Amino acid sequence: REMEYKFRDIEKKWQKHWKESKAYKVSNPDSNRDDSNRDGKPKFYVLDMFPYPSGAGLHVGHPLGYIASDIYARFKRLQGYNVLHPMGFDSFGLPAEQYAIETGQHPAVTTQKNIQRYHEQLDNIGFCYDWSREVRTSDPKFYKWTQWIFLQLFDSWYNRQTKRAARIEELISIFEQEGNATYECPGDEKLTFTPEKWRNYDEKSRQEILMNYRLAYSAFGEVNWCEPLGTVLANDEVVNGVSERGGHPVVKKKMRQWYLRITEYADRLLQGLEQVDFSESMKDMQRNWIGKSQGAEIRFKIKSEKSETEQMVVYTTRPDTIFGVDFMVVAPEHQMIPSITSAAQQTEIDKYLEYVKSRSERERLAEVKQITGAFTGAYAINPFDGREIPVWISEYVLAGYGTGAIMAVPCGDQRDYAFAKHFNIPITNIIGDAYNGNEANPTKDAILQNSAFLNGMVMRDAIDVVLDKLEEMGIGKRKVNYKMRDSGFSRQRYWGE
Image (cartoon, rainbow, N blue to C red; front, side, top):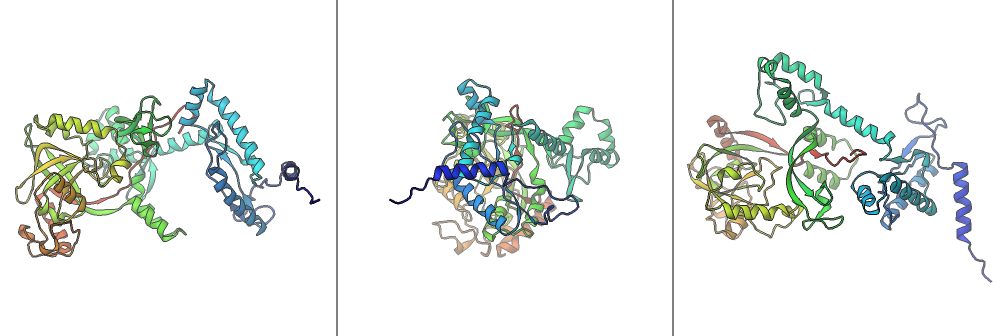
């Protein structure tokens, strides 16, 4: 009879041996040697993404990744490396809180119980973890460092001249001596003050100004708010207008939030991509996420029932197309909507804003074939030819990118073209034969027409001409913009972020 392989007995035997002999425990590096440990072996670090310890235990997706990293950790050991391969648990936050509420138990109790179950399952699989290095994000010994990092960021600002962070006390000293003339405020670019004015501010005003410079700062922002869960949700946690966890309704709401000012590091992040050993496709993904673009901010006067003195600022990478602007589109969250909406359009605008509340940012960007919008009843005035341009709101414009307002050129942008066709907005052709009437053409090589002083110029050559004219007239300026936005940091519970 064929001998039976008693794998359970064999596994238990060796798992016991590994545990008792501390087979995977890693020694600390010698403090005098940066590239080795006491045994003279080079160091190697293999880290998995920590799991959230749910009551259900491991699912098949967990070992899918862990097995691969386990194989690699063992491979590097065989090559003679001193391999640090720890495991931890992402054990704070909303899931732990919700599970505690649903079961009526303290989250510390349920979390500890769940972690024990994960330990058993991970050990049964036979992973080579050094459990002496275990991390639990709900452990005060761990999250005190999260809090410490937050305080370092709160007490720092980004010096664009030295391209590095500095203590906030240094900034206060600069303000006292020279104001902020050479240190543009990232949170409010219009803010300028002299040293005398700074010294005359009360403490509240000073702190509000400093908040616009701090690397960790609070500000009002549109968030995905879930009332039943009592928390803000990330875009990834919202599906079809409801929370991924529990299926609760989610609405857009303006709330004061904490943010990390990562946008100050955009150029350094781009430069850093040239120094890392990533694939080109990964680098391109990162570059697109950062989304650096060069263009112009242009101020358009707004004509509405309520005022003719307001100005709307738009950001565009194509100032050469300014004579082809047939309508403006602003984000539904734009602060000017209440002040420019006409009485006749108020009901339609209110109805549209209510619709957008249930739409996640991902849905708004992904569903390119769905065209929605509403006319405000107001008009922007083209600063060069005085033409009145209707101002619409639409979900495809996001408040967090640029100024939250765009100038729409249907002959040169496909989404603008589709919007114009859907709402029967007349289209101006500024690129001659390059526009066939059936789709937009984003070319920069066409010869401009119907463009006043730009007529006869190649579009790419006209960009600087328009920029010079805008700055000469005092109605615009050159501007570098980024798609990336400051990171929200406002989902702290008792345990911290």
